[in-house]
Image (cartoon, rainbow, N blue to C red; front, side, top):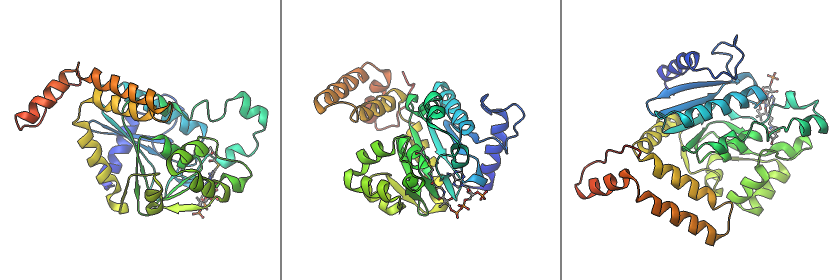
Length: 284
Ligand code: CAA
């Protein structure tokens, strides 16, 4: 990412620091920096000293920012990213080390604030450079699309801490990569590189590190020119495939497909194609 963009992010995050942050936090201390790039909300995890280890303050802040962007009519696509060295190196081990069962059970550790992203109806892209380990890998897998830099490393090393993945790793990784590869990663804690993650179905694109953000923003900008109801219906329909049998999933898809014929954007999209011009969508 260019220096100019980085300074935009800091400047914007001063104005748009989510309320979950302590009032006295400066932008540099904010666990998530939020910048607007036209119709795109860019959320940068920002605990560089801890390789963006995910703690409550960060997850609360990210959750609040996600919900805010989802309801902001000017935002079409959300990108979550980290630094060149780490997307996120997992749940914060320092914060977790003293927890006992009653602490995590009573406080609904993970369930309480890690999966706000599942409520987001707009597309969310993870742009991953460096380490995406444990909860970091799980956060990436919660996103709708994952693009990675060629230095990215994915892994579920929790087994080395005598625990197991707790933010969906055993479930989402298995659905994405299959039992053999999920078992191999989770039971050994090994890391895989970006090309392997691409081959295994965890991610859909790999870019040279310097190109990751420009390319991700470019894809997001292209998506922002599409019709929001159709983007939302497509995302909702694909996610349904993970929840229901094929017959129900097909019915759900068909209903969404039929429903989109009730939008002005469907008329505009098809008319524009026939008139050989770019469509002008109103998201209605
Ligand atoms: N939690 C807290 N702090 C972390 C951290 C984490 N998950 N990962 C890294 N850090 C801290 C380190 O403690 C270190 O801090 P100090 O400078 O104060 O010593 C700093 O970040 C830099 O880390 P390293 O010196 O270790 O950097 P490295 O380049 O040598 O190694 C690494 C990088 C391979 C990612 C290594 O830091 C590492 O293995 N991190 C832990 C990864 C991990 O086990 N993640 C799973 C956590 S459990 C989980 O996520 C549960 C769940 O499913 C929700």
